[in-house]
Length: 306
Image 1 (cartoon, rainbow, N blue to C red):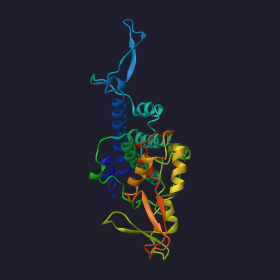
Image 2 (image 1 turned 120 degrees about the vertical axis):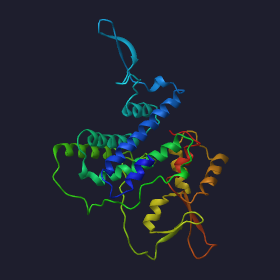
Image 3 (image 1 turned 90 degrees about the vertical axis):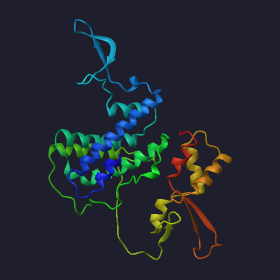
Image 4 (image 1 turned 180 degrees about the vertical axis):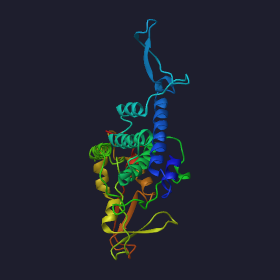
């Protein structure tokens, strides 16, 4: 995934989107199969592809045997089979699966036929969601890797905008891919706040407005000015809204000391929590507490989803 991100962040490199899709799907395939191995006590047979064993007369029997590849080594299951097995165990959501399947379709077209260069905007939306989903699932599955060591993000400034996209007639094959992509996006579950099929990214450069809200992330972070609308988008949850939504997400959640300790930890992370005073110039004025939707990744580590 790091290689996919590094290539994607080079705007002038040829075969950029295709390379990202190939490497990103490769990373998802390895990750999903590793998770299947983990939950099956590292039994290699759990990821081997099986086929019906042929009898001496050439007829297929009922017994199964491991399918071998051309070099005679055991063949593993496909990424589609891997994600379907994890989805059946409720370890992957519909949004993640739709995102992966959309990228797989583009990857397959690129490798086996031709790439759909006319869908750069859509591919960018898929790519952003892919990276964010990958990071979120690593945290959700509690994989022991220190993500702070890596700069796992696509460049925040979009390389492709609607103003620069080329309008051209679509071939029948391209129309098929467009319809497939739209069907995946339209199926996105709004209740799944952690994961996305595609993320629409807009970048606007404008002078700071008088009513914008400065937000500093970290002790030595860069001060970011947010408009009222942008602030509510980043920190949409008040404490009461957080409590009410938490009750609908987790089956074993109680508003006890454990819950309060988690809230206490959340408040240490400026990406998840922000205190807004009614009078910013008066440090003694009343304040309202706001939380990001990202808090659910913390709660997932302590409670069971409904």
